[in-house]
Image 1 (cartoon, one colour):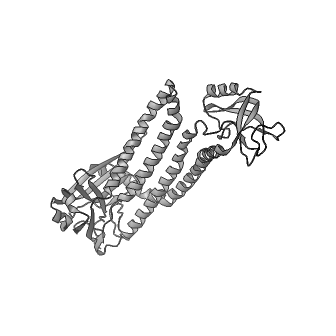
Image 2 (image 1 turned 90 degrees about the vertical axis):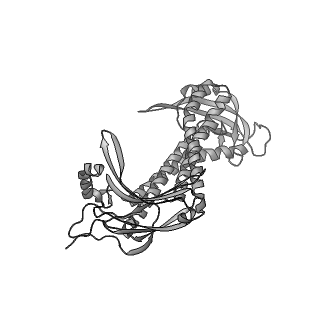
Image 3 (image 1 turned 60 degrees about the vertical axis):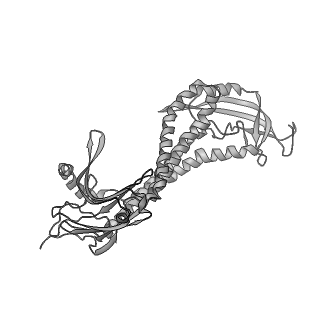
Length: 420
């Protein structure tokens, strides 16, 4: 009980300020706003340039003449960025197969489909400006359905794949929304007594507590296997799409051309690519875990108090013969979060663990029942922003050459009943 005692005063402070904590609804709202603006960034800086570049494959290539070219600069507190600024003329008439000097004349200032976004790389852009000196004859692509729309450099703009980082914004927003929804579900379960709260010692005027009606009550795991799979899958997809797109489309072409300078970013990104492969492995591991046998845990009461009798019954769905061993334990954990300088640290300690069943026989794993009497000095469940005491039924199963079973089922223990 060291952590809890050391930070008891902090927990008491948390009790008085818990009403000021952000609600799941606020997290959902903020996630929707953050993700919404992030989605706008994705559309503006990645999706639209990509679609325009793809659509330009059907545009008509015509001769053009450069009228003006210069290196545009944008200065701010973060430094100076650049872009190629150019103006050119061309003639086009729908249906003409060759350049016609009598065709209508048009002008355009579109260099590529990044629409004039400033970026680093002054030397490369200055070299491009010199290549496109006024009077230079080159070619551009014209939209046959709208002849006033043209682009000098068709195809995917340089650096387009770096814009994949904008996908992180809607991803973070999505995770905020998911976190808020999970918080709402937990809050509703708390009110229903499935995940109870007990903040501090009881008083003579004990507040309303969750329904303590007699079961049977089926427990739900703290984190479902499918939810884990979806979260890991989305994160792994975004991570790998971002990293591998940069490697394949922005770096590898220069490597294949023999540019030794391109090896430095390639070696740097290879670390992130390795992490992406590990994430894929974690996703596959979790996918295989979906097929594991599941334990259905049923208890005699929705919530317990010190000294109560816990009656646990389990039923195994699936093939229990796949398991070489199965264990069920009742575990108490305490955690404390505190700040050391600029670092926030969370320490977790298992202060009590009682093994309820250790099974290695398929018949016993298939179903059974066990009882345990809680001690009269059992510490109640306690959840605050910096301190927690939680009780959990731990289910661990060993499956040879396959992901093992690892499920946790929260149990709520209320303070002792007060006597009038």
